[in-house]
Length: 335
Ligand code: AQP
Image (cartoon, rainbow, N blue to C red; front, side, top):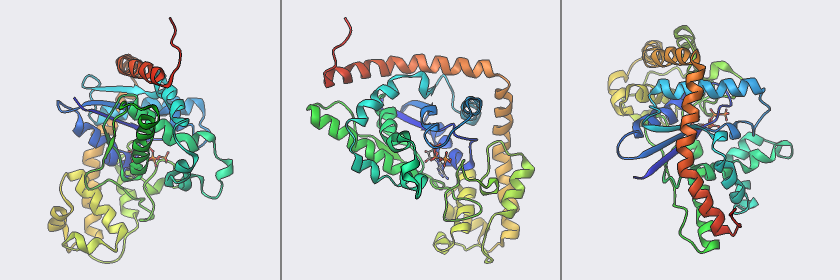
């Protein structure tokens, strides 16, 4: 069975972007067709800025609660916390020695996150994509459901696999494919249609958090930036209207329709009418998830047990793959 791997950083609370771009699609891929491994990537979460230890722990458990509340079944999927499966970091080191500086320098996410201040970023932030390649390839995963922003990192994963295979003359690591589907592969900020919705945006009004209550969701949507025109009746009419397109995409993804289907319903309406419809839909879809998350957050021991069990299952896969990798590289094994 082909294997799926994907992860989310516990660097802050979950956003609607993470939900629509990633988690909702993780749920869709669960089933007979794939073996699915989903990960809280806590080792990645400390690359960008200092997190208080208690905050990191809370974020990780909350993310786990978010996964489960959204429909990830810890029986059907392997649900793990990255640091509990040490083979991720161990293979990550090998890949640090396969990837080239020049490849990493081309990564747009590093450039975006570092801005003008590259010299002052952690070495971990620069090496992030090599660890991400290890996260995927330590499972020999071939399918990686991600949002649009992660496409370049999955391509780099293929470059790393190809160079490793070539350098050592083996056919060991598979070529992983990004799976980028649906109407909301890039959810934008509610305040600026040219910026992606992000956990770490300083403005809380720019995003919908999975823990926002109904009033907060309605208020953020009401205040979302838009233009003065009515909605068009075809997707083509959204081309030069990033904010309008974003809200329609969110509506389409939440209601599981295509953008054209949505526009057949709402084309011609003003935002004054469309925004309350979107708010109602968002509250309908998100409220059950956030109340289930809140319930699970009171069951911390249960969450910790799920992650412990997930790590045990994961290591049945990752330990042999690391052993084989070390053998290929030429490390002397213990006797
Ligand atoms: N706005 C988005 N639209 C669609 N997909 C998104 N993803 C993130 N933002 C959007 C997808 O969510 C997954 C997990 O992302 P991540 O936590 O690893 O880091 P990120 O991409 O850097 O997400 P954030 O929310 O912007 O976090 P910070 O602010 O910490 O950097 C990925 O599949 C991503 O594509």
